[in-house]
Image (cartoon, rainbow, N blue to C red; front, side, top):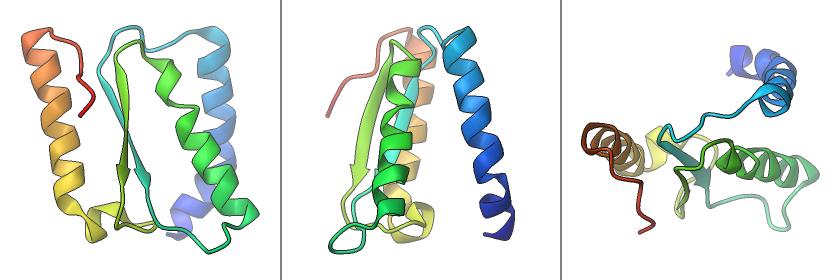
Length: 102
């Protein structure tokens, strides 16, 4: 967690560079978003959600998946959501078919 927090500003800057100089083209991309947050959502919750939603347009072959029962640590809260996302990416890559919204 410490490393993630320390990297937060750096990641944000790198995302801006990617957006400014290119995209992921048609590379399959599944963005997994947590479904649970503070009630009402804090400013950090809102900013985090906006940052993740901003990832979706980086690829013309992308989908947004909400892990409805997950907080910040989706792999622990709903590992099946993460596994399904990885399978969808691999399937799209192998078959050349675009990701389908489910």
